[in-house]
Amino acid sequence: MAKTLTYFAFLFFSTVAAAVGDGHTFSRDLSPESLDLKREKLSHLHFYFHDAITGPNPTVMRVAEAAVTNKSATLFGGVAVLDDPLTVGPEPSSKLVGRAQGMYAAASQEELGLLMVMNLAFMEGKYNGSTLSVLGRNTIFSKVREMPIVGGSGVFRYARGYVEARTYSFNVISGNAVVEYNVYAFHY
Image (cartoon, rainbow, N blue to C red; front, side, top):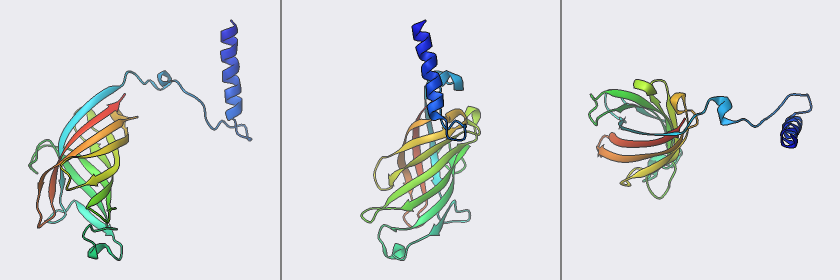
């Protein structure tokens, strides 16, 4: 009985302490069960990211640059937006499973290192309508790049994990690339 009274007193005073001067509650603790969160799962997704800078249907557009961007060997200061198709195989005609939508910025003066900010928006199977949010550093000439998953929506609500990117092909003249992605996402 004393434990129960202590618990209810704790809840009461926690709620009172979180109340703002106008009587509204700013924050409160929740249990995972109250949000219908079950056992956490780990999903592995594998697909190819098609980055087309040139050609009849570019999927990347530069939207900003610094005064030094075009003089810089690393394109430092350049910012681009992307809407890249994600496919099951490396061929552009392969089945479309989603799109990578976001932006990247050339953020290194020493090497071609991009700050990637993007949503992987899926449109296939049980992941249709769900997204994973990626925010990280991509040194595109490294063999393997790892970027963190910082969240998601739909099936991937409360997601965390990481993305491994490996260049499958890169055309030095056009700048177009196909990148293999392995995604490891914890979610409920």
